[in-house]
Length: 208
Image (cartoon, rainbow, N blue to C red):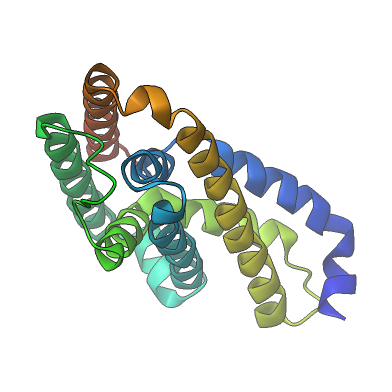
C-alpha cells in the first residue's frame, strides 16, 4: 500500500537523491581515500558508516530533534563547528601523512575505525539534516501512513548511498596502479587533505 501510494513520486525522489549522493562531499572523498588505501573492499566499512549515518540523520530530521536544529541557532552553530573541526583534523592528518597508500599487508586503521570515521562525518554535518527536512515532506502523501512512507524513502536513500559510493570506490581502485607510486600517493594525499580542509572551512562558514 505504501509503495503504491508513493509510486508516482518515488522515481522523482530517486533521481533527486541520486544526484545528491553523486555530488562531491566529505563522504565521497573519504570513500575514494579508503579505496585507494585499502582496496575497494576495504572501503566498504566506511561506505556502510556513511549509509547508516544518512539513515540516522534522516530519522533525527523527522523527529523533534530535527526541529530543534532547524529553529535553534545555537544548536546549529554548535554542531556546525564540531563537524568543521573534525573535517579540518582529517584534512591535516591526510596532508601530513608520509604515505597516502600503505603496503597492502599494512593498514593504517582497522575496519571499525573506518566505519566510525565515516559515520562521524555524516552525523556531524548539519546540512545533511536540512536536505531531509526540505525534501522529504514533498514526497510524503498526507493520506498515507507517515512512518511507513518515511521508512521507504530513507531506506531507498541509504541503498543509493551504498550503490553510488561503491561505484566511486571501484573507479578509484581501478586507478590504483598509478596512485601506488610515490608521486601519485603524495599528490592524492595532498589533494584529499586540502579538500577536507576546504570542506571544513566551508562548513564553519555555512549558515542556515
